[in-house]
Length: 633
Ligand code: WTA
Image (cartoon, rainbow, N blue to C red; front, top):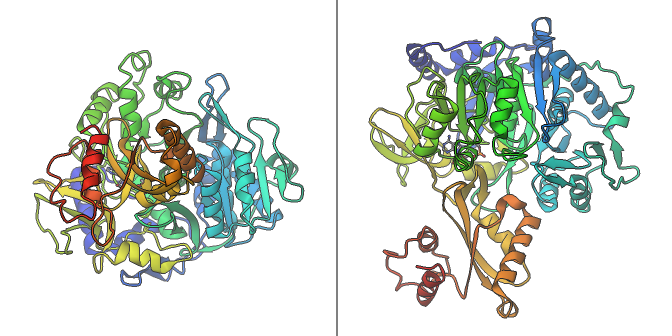
């Protein structure tokens, strides 16, 4: 793999990637194992949109993880798994062992009728089997759709229905801190609405009593019993679908972002090795959940393609104590640690006492992802976790981009706190104003777009290509629009300012305001609602919900109403979408055409009741005063 070693080397590679992208990516792609080389390196237009990389190339991504390197990597640890409980021993799987388990489970999938192109839903806790499940799907050419195991039954069934999944992989329960979550019960509830699901394979984790539906549900351990650990990988085209991952946008239900095989493979390994500057023997830990894109690209595919050792953690940062992350770093001598700003801020809030007992000297590189990191959190991470010697890679990217896009290269790109710094090779950012006019030069602020395809970009949104076009390629003609606002400073460095659309980022989790509103509106006593984000010290953004009750609801106790609204949201989406603040109001400020004035609601949620602009043209200006008073302004 082409490795950048110096800043000059970075500029050189970047230049090459822009002046001749096809040759640049071909050279990198050639280091992979293709059963047949591709016919065309790139075909694209951003109008339809159509993007095809390495078309006609035949491969299987798991052969690139395993067979490609078995002679050198067989005994290297691939996964070091750390339990929720520090008392349970950790588990190490070498590449050889992981290969056998993936092949065996691939055979189990085949035995259960899974064929190339079938969709398989994965609703599993952070266990090695989650990785095994994903790779086994890829091995047989099935498309995995991983659903974060914190989502509700309703969210799970929406995703299963949309992708028409044939099979579900889950476990009896899941340990999360002091809690034991009955996730099979959630699956049972979800499947009441999912006629396409024929089989459910259940992994035993907590051993609690669960319902097993005869003919549909089978145990993982029974299914693998006596099954061969050899499997010949399915041949895939570079542009065959690898996975679907649902993510929230500004409108409607979450959409299934589709990633394909060849380009995603090339880009995730390339960025993983370069951004983190991984060497043989390094121990890399990404604390994300595999239910998010970070888990897909940088727990599973990128690191395993590069033959690295990945720590996988089942639990939460604060269990059984707030120093757990640091304890794990010491225990496994982690060299590279990748986490979210929210985690850093919440651990920072606990002070240094939980940090100092642990020896963090193994650390070489720190990373962050998922949301803007504030300068204070960056400094704390740098000083107290990295002891001033570990470069921080603040990596900006998205579910849709498949891999990191704007990020320092560890130890090579000079960093600035809160800046994602410079685009990685192959990435051509462009800033535009609201009319789509390019903002050239440095010292500008605008909407972040990308003007040229990169190998791991989304290809479509599952089952609805028009939605993909509309969402990402129609706002600014000929450009991929990210939804983020960005500043390019005098040095040409990029700082991500946050979303400019109706997406909020709560603890690094993406949620559409409309999605949360729809959930709140499901409550029988709610008439309508408006949801906005507001600055939150720990979570980055919090969820502020303004709720108008039905007549029948108005006599109810307000606190009881609020908790009942919260349970509705938990039930419809999951606890991550739970509003932090609910204000019950008699009406929402609307224009004469009936549009909710979110700008006003956002300002009030931010705690600023002044300068709300001209409200006299509103249909109901009187509610603004009421809302201000209700919000304590
Ligand atoms: C935000 C997560 C600032 C951004 C990989 C983006 C960031 C959204 C950063 C995608 C960062 C991600 N700095 N903001 N380093 N990384 N974001 O799809 O708003 O869950 O559009 O992908 O997170 O979230 P997603």
